[in-house]
Amino acid sequence: MDPLDPFKPPGPQQPGQQPGQQPGQPPQAPQAHQAPQYGQPGPPMSGQHPAYHPYQQFPGYPAPPAVPTVNGFSVASLISGIVCCLPPLGLVFGLIGLRQINRRGQRGRGLAITGIVLSAVSTLLVTLFFATGAANDFWKGFKDGVEEVASYRTVADLDKGDCYDLPGAGDKDGTEVSEIKIIDCDRPHEAEITGGFKLTGYKDYPGEETLVPVAELRCEEIDFAYAMDVWALPDSMEPYYYFPTSESWKQGDRRVSCGYSTSKNVKTTGSVRRDASTLNEDQIAYLKAENDVLRAGFRLPEDDFPAAAHLYRAWAKGTSGDLAASAKALRGHAWQGDVRKTALQRADQFDAARAHWDKAAKATGEEAFWDHVYSADEALKVDTEVALRTALKGLETTPPPAPEERA
Image (tube, rainbow, N blue to C red; front, side, top):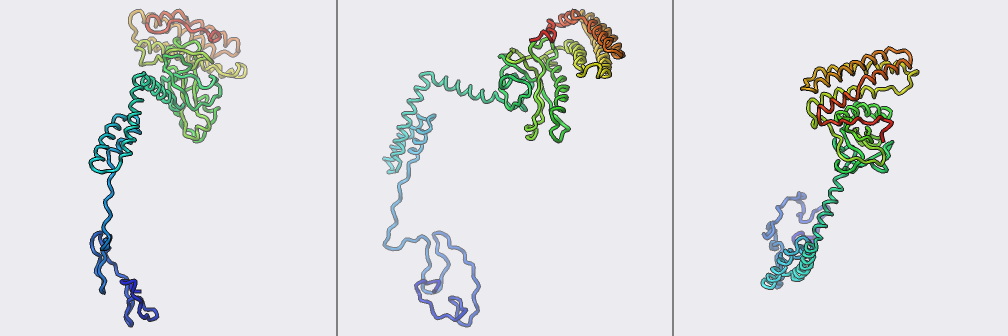
């Protein structure tokens, strides 16, 4: 077959001879030809055959008539009619589209009419929406929905100062929590975050036995720094914290969130925040000295005295050191006026209590040990503390109830 004339019968061909190859000539290698450009003739061809022109119309067949275009305003009218928040535009676009369609002979009349109808209905609905006050209800519901979603946070995202209700039924022992709803602290709530810290130094999940002591010690420091005036804490509130579970640990959770929570089904109002940002220098100096002594009492050993007498004596020795440091801090602060007299009186009481704790640290018997501890407690007069708090102004002056009297 002649590649230039598919209707020309092929001539005789020798074995192994390529089409178009003359006998005795070597085979021809393929040659590259530049592709013809649209609307221009291709490369000249041998023989009597004319060059082909791409997309050339054959004689006798006229070109088909041009298809009318779709009017753009008719499309815009339909879209605006569907999008109910733009109904007036749909009416305007539809009317303009109909005029242009009639004048220019374009397509899209059905689109324009549909857009006009939809826009008219949407305009009526929007008018009723605002006239009946439904708009206010809509935006209020929308705003409430957004705030509802934004109020939920994961435990790892809790921030210092966040107030919330305890998840579930309020059971705080062993409850696994993923999300918590944040509440304005001025509204009734059950818990408040005082801060948190990131666990470091553990490659694998260390287990609750390891995490609980670490969380308690670090959260104690964070709690006292956040709520320095412990007398201002509601009677029902106690320290509370979240730490990672084995499952959340696998997902990269290393956050311990510290705070206070109320007893089950009890709510409180207002923040317990009384930190350095809300207190003056005199109040901070006094509360720090007083809280260091209070925290020393938390070091009470868990075992009974007969089984851990050496731990009790070490506890007594440590408490004596804390009292000495607090007395020194009170004497070293630059108090003004009558506050100085009462602060020095409190420092003397710290020294008196320290002397009894020194004796407890040397006691060999359990009865003698506790006798010295009780004497140390009696040396700290509540009346002096109330007087000093009153002189400093702005601090809580009502002593908290004893632990057995709390709600």
